[in-house]
Image (cartoon, rainbow over all chains, first blue to last red; front, side, top):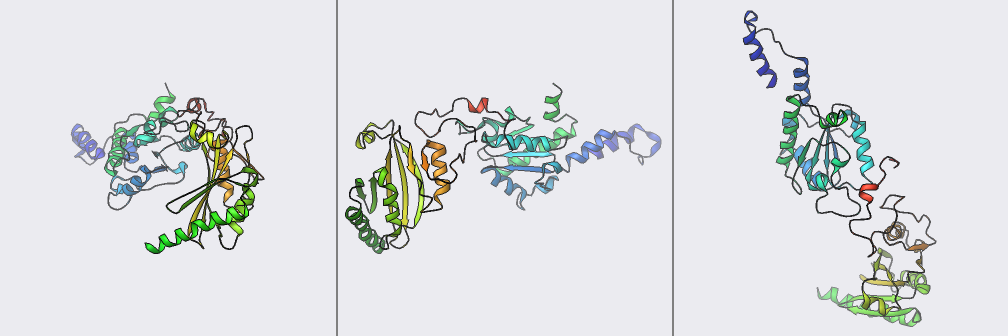
Amino acid sequence: MGLAKTHIQSGQGAAQTDGNIITTTIDKVVNWGRKNSLWPMPFGTACCAIEMMATLASKFDLSRFGSEAIRFSPRQSDLLIVSGRISIKMMPVLKRIYDQMPDPKWVISMGACASCGGVFDTYTLIQGVDQFIPVDVYIPGCPPRPEDLIDAVMQVQQKIASGAAPKGIEVAYE
Amino acid sequence: MNEEKGIAEQASPLVLEKLAAHHSEALLAQRETRGRVGVVVRKEQAYAVLEYLKTDPELAYTYLVDVTAVDNSQMESELMQFDYARFMVVYQLYSYQGQCRVQVKVPVHENDLSVPSVTGLWRGANWLERETYDMFGINFEGHPELRRILMPDDFEGYPLRKDYPLRGRGERESFNFEKQNV
């Protein structure tokens, strides 16, 4: 849809083309493609992962938003969904998976545990994965409903369409 | 319902009777509440008692349900009962034959934190004992591979002890994420 909008605006500007030639920017086309074909890397460690599975299944059907191609290899994915508790022993694994994902990459921190430790304020639990990896979108809830995850994916899509850099790149250039 | 109750009522005294007959010197205490039987045995005879419970053809407690421990350091009433033994190692056994359970407790003093491993009797005890070691620091002598199972290998302290702070000793902040072998 973003591309269609670009057509019209460009078409109006160039009177002699009769709307048959599209002028746009490479970035916009690329972002349009990225936004509609997000490949998520699921990192499900707790009950949030059950909601994530429901989101991907037929009833909620995340493929309507172009991100149903779940990859269990970080090298093939560009959206990390952290859904569940992360312990100090698990955090190095998560960090490594994040590092293995090719740029540009986005991160959703799903649910209370991933975002802030949730009710598990204990010796072994990371109190928010954003202490170690940059997070683009947080989802509240324990666990969040599938609609919340769809909303988060759409927020990531809006962020991509707007041309804003992923949080990871922002952090790298700070 | 009645039938189940019947089995429990029948089987429960049997284990206590047989233990009293064969291992009376090992028994420190025993109790029976609504068909649930528990015994406290001396550490020195613990292995022999557990072996007896498993191998006796009438009892046949062949299934080791769980091995865990209790830190009684803040329970004065419990501490006094067993000569100020800080820990209580707990074995939960189940007999498919008699369809009944028995709980075996072994008091362990803080200055001698070793208990004989029962991996020779039940192979399933391997990870259960490792977890008890990980959480309470109790050494199971004769265990084939006694190392941490849940916490990272270089973790210090035993987190389920009562003197371990709930929020830890700063591991969440100081844990070395780069050093870990992933």
